[in-house]
Image 1 (cartoon, helix red, strand yellow):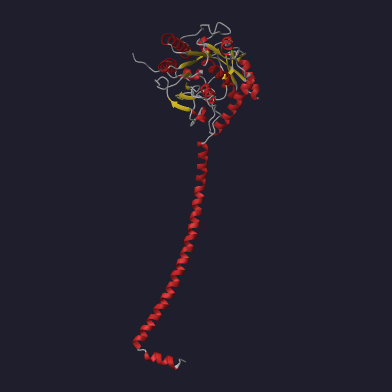
Image 2: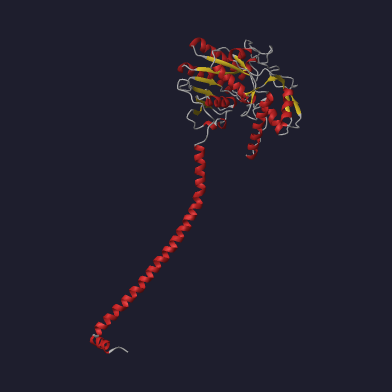
Length: 425
């Protein structure tokens, strides 16, 4: 029951005002309800949004984490650790060019000169050289790699030139004999021209092949050789003989400082496994359980030196005052058959020895006389044959594993001969 005062108040209000008051009350109530609804909707939406953002962020995190891992790996590769390098003062540090520096011997020479603290530029056209042989130096401030063929002129400032550019195994140099001749003649002319322009000293990596199938045993530096000038090996043998002639012509006429190393059989890691040379052929065949192929009777003799011995000899010769040719090789002589049996034993292989017809112009005797190197350079080989062979075998095993994973197994192969083209008269 309303009190009398309340009744009097209601009766005093006109119906019109009463409607207005009721309308305002309803509006206030509606506003209150709507406010609560909006507030609840906002809170709900916010909750949903935050939950969605959390899920979205979680999803992004899953995607980004592998990318972060890759970035960390890249950072590690950019900050790779190089082999230890000596610090040389400006007056002692030399700018050195190595042609064929990505090849077997060239890459080991690159390692030594880099670790000795010099600035090294490697030039290679990658016919037989491989980038992976020198990839551990890429990015180092003292190292530069140039893809270039020495048959074309090269303009660069250097103090020393090690001219090693040339295919050195019979299958490679007989595959394109004209290119082999050009590399050893025009390429050598270009390097001698560069040495003359910049006042650099040039070392020519010549070969024991300049002695041909020798009639003098062991071979001394004053022996003139016994070479077939028109045989299948002539492109390399005579190419190197002409290269030596060019070196001494430039020395006499233009005053260029030259050094000539006559290199005998060398082996070690980074050899091409299928380059057709004795060591690589025997090791590869023994590891794969295939017959070891001996050309001829196997009584031919060779003298094998480990690559680190050769590299030390090259550096000693370059920095000496000896301008006449110097033999660099191991005077320890072995027959090819003895060598095949030694590799079988070291590998632990059951491979048989297979005799094939003798190769044309294959030297029957090969043994260096290294008295000159001992006397004038204080150099001689120090790595025992078996120790060096074990290192080479270990390298070849790893290469076979790598190539097996990549579905490629190399096979030793004879020289590749291009088919002759018909000429029209």
